[in-house]
Amino acid sequence: MADPCFQIKGTSVTSMVLDLYHYQSEEFARTLHDKVQSAPLFFTGSPLFINLASFNGELAKAELQEIIKHCQSLGFQLFGCKGGSEPQAKMAKDLGLVHIPSSRPRPEKTEQAPEPEPVAPASPAPESVSRPTRIIERPVRSGQQIYAEGSDLILLAQVSEGAEVIADGNIHAYGPLRGRALAGVRDNPSARIFCQHLEAELVSINGHFVLNDTLREKCWKQPAQVFLQDDSIEIAAL
Amino acid sequence: MAKIIVVTSGKGGVGKTTSSAAISTGLALRGHKTVVIDFDVGLRNLDLIMGCERRVVYDFVNVINKEASLKQALIKDKRTEGLFILPASQTRDKDALTHEGVEAVLDELAKDFDYIICDSPAGIEQGAQMALYFAEEAIVVTNPEVSSVRDSDRILGILQSKSRLAEQGKSVKEHLLLTRYNPARVASAEMLSVADVEEILAIPLLGVIPESEAVLKASNQGAPVILDEDSEAGQAYSDAVSRLLGEDVEHRFLEQQKKGFLQRLLGGK
Image (cartoon, each protein chain N blue to C red):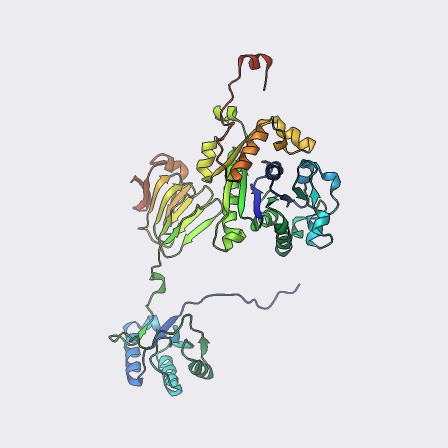
């Protein structure tokens, strides 16, 4: 069989989003310029799309063309337009932009946009966004894996041997912890594991780990916390 | 509407088919119209244990492939009123089972029966997943030893993630059935105790079936052990059926039986 010359897969790309509230050419150009000046390297060549979901009124075609020009001259790669009304979607397409359908209904027009900073490009580091804590109420059984991405993980029932619980933040286990627990897996040395009943096969913080044999020497089957001190795993009674 | 119950374990040889036969017979004896389906396509055993192997003409796969009607394939149990067996195919493999096919058969059975017992094959692959997919309740058969308990834990995880109810955000009702329990070996710490297994699996205990010669004898004779009312295993299965029906029955046969003087003299078992 010949090798296929391509493969189509789903993927997700990190991009910046510019939430546009209202538009006035000079003001927009100036604010965007100031923003880029504050961190030139960060913004240069960044993929960007405009979100019209909170835009007050209708954006004219000429205005959108201006926005495209402003963004390009400051080094952004403007590729799309999100939300907005039907005619605006068509307009964006006519100007060669990708139209992304709005993920939620347009907010009420009466909702006033925040005044002090009318043009606010996306928060600079999307990874630093903290997510709500993940709470698991049912037992985590052998062979199952639970990952709390960008958050703490709370386990209300047991974690069986052969199960794996992973969190970017802390792990709190209120049932017996018999499987593997890995906290702070994305470079978070201050993450900790708290448990009511320590019987784990392995505990790990930020890549440092200890096995069952070591755990048996201290706080075995007791309430305990696991944390990192000078790059070594410490276990202390609670 | 019928209640669909899967009898599963992950590990092989722990007593799934024996338990399926006993529990379905027990339900039928209490007047509930019951059908027991052998999902172990390619390694059919249920018909042997139920003593109807010579009466198998059409099987589950024939019905799924519409080569036979359900009525033609169902075997009426000769001993117990209201009990039917849907045997597995011996000549096919587990890929013959499809979600749509199994669902259609279960839907048709649900019109006539009170209980549908699905006897799962061992393992956690497609055959076992097919058997548990449509279940509302699960009887997890476990032996008091670590590997069996670990596999049961694994299958419980699959039940709560890959079954239809789990996909709908609901949960399958779980029952623990501990089989081949030997109180003497538990006392000498060769076997896990009921408490040990309950602690690890943390699901409600449906019954404890003592290790008994009656089970092997029953299998070889093709008569579900529950019909042997004198045996401890038969009584324990009967208790388990009562609990499955919601009755509150105390657990028996958990302690080592003290042998009387005469029994010791005569070497009674």
